[in-house]
Length: 329
Image (cartoon, rainbow, N blue to C red; front, side):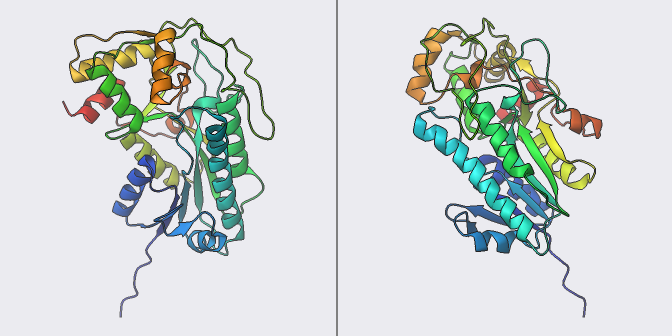
């Protein structure tokens, strides 16, 4: 009799989110048995260490994506949950990987490109330090520290420093397209606003923002982005390239300015105009939407140096093609 072929196992922490769902679908196509860890409705819960270990032990691939969504108001409660939900779930995976009799060959974990220094003049690569200060950078540093702490013999670790992922059904993408259709898809301009403390540091070693509260960017703030299909394909690429470990910027090689972003969205939905939003207009709107203006005002400009040096070919290197594929026109 022929032996039953070994079914590779992939474990996704936070598999119910937008990216986790897309990856689970792709990995099943690749022939993986996909198991998930979450708070409810998953194969194991985060508060069940034995259940997490049972899934991780013998797995071929582990991907940690758990964490509270950041498109919310940074109240003290939300700030604490954003940090805790990332660090504690990563620590849970770390304990399982180190305790496993048959540890996974690859462990990729979520991270963010927000910890690089704000810049309007030059991009950042994986070789640059994470030297931005304040809430979001502190979260990223503690998140990665939980991943890279200690030794994991036999397991290659990769931090997915993710930019804005665009795709059909992506929450931020849906919001931006809706604004464009309503004639509100103009650029967002930074400027003075009443001082607040929501972006102050957090965690074991909190840092205080050392830049002015605003920059006169006039829509020139850069947005690094990546199409959902490139994100999924890049994960496959990293899985198959044993020489890659450490941080990897998950972003298209062609960041755009805020002006270019909103113009591209307007063209995609055939909106004849888009009203610009100075900060004094933007802030009250963000308060109503229960989110933060830094998501569109901060200049996040990174290059995917590791992916490009390894030979990854982007399916959607330009924003216009990516948006057209999403909108379907």
